[in-house]
Length: 183
Image 1 (spheres, rainbow, N blue to C red):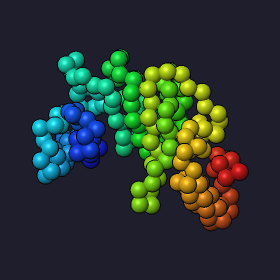
Image 2 (cartoon, helix red, strand yellow):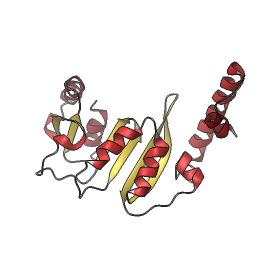
Image 3 (cartoon, rainbow, N blue to C red):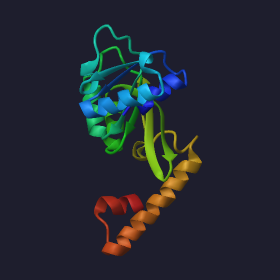
Image 4 (cartoon, one colour):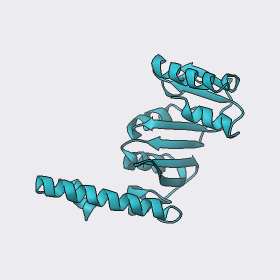
């Protein structure tokens, strides 16, 4: 609710930011945050679902879509401005489905890795226009976790394996999908 927009301005990553939120309550939180750190002139706050708050006069060169499920991100991408192809995506779920959508719709996945904050892991995917082919493991786990993000990725896999083993011991078995993940 405004954190990414504020950080983009504070770190000089963007001269101007358009921040949209679906709910008025969330938008008000973003406005309050920007106001509390005196950066209101650098952010245009708009209430709307996805890109519906964007006008033809907005000159967007990149968009961040974060904090929602992969299926919702797909829905938003389907309604993107036609000339916009640069995105940073942070899906909370359905990451594999999002990766499949990106490949099928001519997005090139540049970076796809896990980041850790506190004890939580988040997928972050940077895409642009172009073709991309992923091996099955990259589709499931992310393209760049195997090459430039090994420490965080290994930590995540170890934690995930332990959770699945604990879950299996508690229930006496796993669903086919979870057992396949464990194998």
